[in-house]
Each structure stands twice: as C-alpha cells, then as structure tokens.
Length: 358
Ligand SMILES: [Zn+2]
Ligand SMILES: [Zn+2]
Image (cartoon, rainbow, N blue to C red; front, top):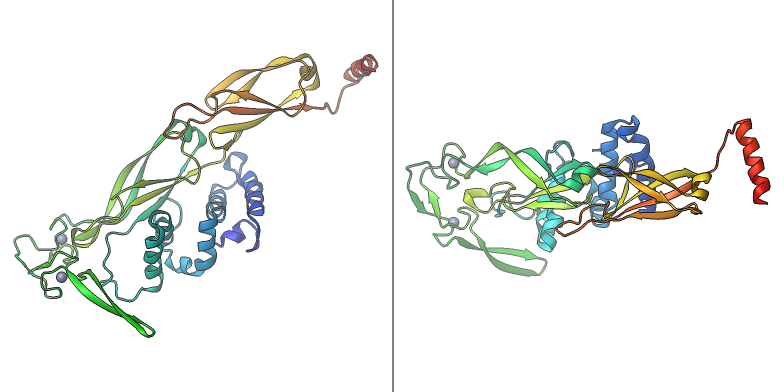
C-alpha cells in the first residue's frame, strides 16, 4: 500500500491546512478532466479521505503498519479489505468497535474459532460526480463475501442429520470464560464458541460449508445513493455485511461516498461556488451574462457599477438538502478582469476614456 503522506508529498506532522492545500493543488494537476491520470487522481483522493478526517488519520498514524498487513486487495474498485473493515468498525461501533479492531489486529486472546462474533462488517468505496450527488444515484456493486450456506440454511447440519446437545456448553449456549491480567483474574459468561449460543450441534456437519453455516459467494447489490449526499458521508446497510457463523447476525455494509471534484463548482454543504469573469465595461455599465448551474445555464444580471469580488447569489441553484426540503444556493464571485494585449484602437479608446474619467 502506498503511504498516504507520500502520495500527497507531505511529512507526517503537517497541519490539516497543509493537507488540504496539498490535496487541492494535486487534485487540480491530476484531475482526469484536465488530462491527469485517473489512477493517480484516485490515489490522491483516497489519501485525502483518510488524512483529512482527524479520527481516520489518527488511526492511520497509529496502526499504519498493521493496516498494511491487514490489507489484502486494492483499496478502491469496490473491493473490500481488512483495512476498510477497520474503518467501518470505528465509524459504526464506537467503543465496542474498537475492541473488535483490536482483537482483529492483535489476535485478541483466543483462536478464530473461540472468538464468537456475528458476521464482519464490510466497507466499500463508491465514487460519484457532483451531478449524481445532486440528483441521487444508483450503483450496482459486487462483493465476494460470506453468505448463509444455501445447503443447510445456515444451520451447519447436513440436511436430514439430527441435532445433538453441544458438548462444550452442555446445551446452555453460554460458557464461563476465565482470563487474567497481572494479579487479577476474572470470569465472564460468553456465548458458547462451539455452537454459537444455540446449545445444539449437528450430528453430521453440512458437506458444503463444513458445519460453519456460511460459504463465500459473489453477491451483487443495488445501492441507492440519496440526493444531497456529501463527500465523506457513509451509507450503512444493516445486515448486508458478511454472514455470521451458524446463522448468527450478519455484519453491516458501509458505503463510503466519494464525490469527485467538479470542473466548475466548489461545494460547501448545500451551497455551490464558482467564479465568473467580466470586463470593466460590463462592470461599469451593467450587463446580463450567462452563468453555469448544475444542469444548464441561467441569466445573471450584472448591475451597473459592480465591484470586482462581489458575490451574487443564485437562489435555489445549489445542492438539495439531504433528507430535507429545498436547496442551497449558487454563489457566483464576479471578478473584473483588466484587459491585456490591447490593440492600438482599443488603446486610443481607453486613453480617451481615461481623460473623461479624470
Ligand atoms: Zn451448510
Ligand atoms: Zn455450545
């Protein structure tokens, strides 16, 4: 995995402002619309996603090396990896999520089998354009994940085989677990690791899943992205993560939304921003010009005597509010440009104008 700091050309201890500045500069240079390499652009965005979020950055700084080991496949491209699972846990689970992460990275105390838990969460990245964020979008994503075993329906028993009382918990579904830390030892009642709390086990294990109740399969999901969604927001789909062992609860699926930078518009929340240039005759006399908005163009009235840097508001031409009513505004900063490379005719006219203005 590439080092996020290196991708942005930064040292580790830089300020958030410096990260933002470096990202803006690189994103401009590498933007595919401007002939940049889409792969490089993607990497820059990924790096920024992590480093611009204080929580994610702290985790990356702290566990960076472990992230590297945990990472299997690529980060983007709709795949999932341990690395992203970790983030999903942090965002979704609060403190208990942290414990999960910890045991995942460091192996906890027990073996994989004794670590009882429901299915793992999955996190995927989806890139959308600003237009898609405004209108809402749909994406089909394919995941290779554990699903309930179709042969045994998640029970882990070969169809037709009888169930027997679990020998580990003697049918109670719970066992006492003793652990010690220094001088202290304590015990805890936990779900039985053998039967996952059911108290029963199959006499004959399912031949397809080996008794675990789940198999790996490719699953295609249609994801609805709501209008008004912003960069960095996460859509969570409960129960769409990895299946749990023996029919226990499935994990969740987290969809990280990346809104690609727009060619013309910047965005802050529900408002959009752009810059428009006019000449000083238009500024002095007033004019009607065309301004780009998300889906087309609108007329923009320049009042006589407009000062350079004036921000005009196009009401309701911003982004729709997420789960809300109405829309933000489009803010147009009008810059008066000074003519350069003027012809001799223009020069004469300007000189005459100059005398007039004295
Ligand atoms: Zn099975
Ligand atoms: Zn048991």
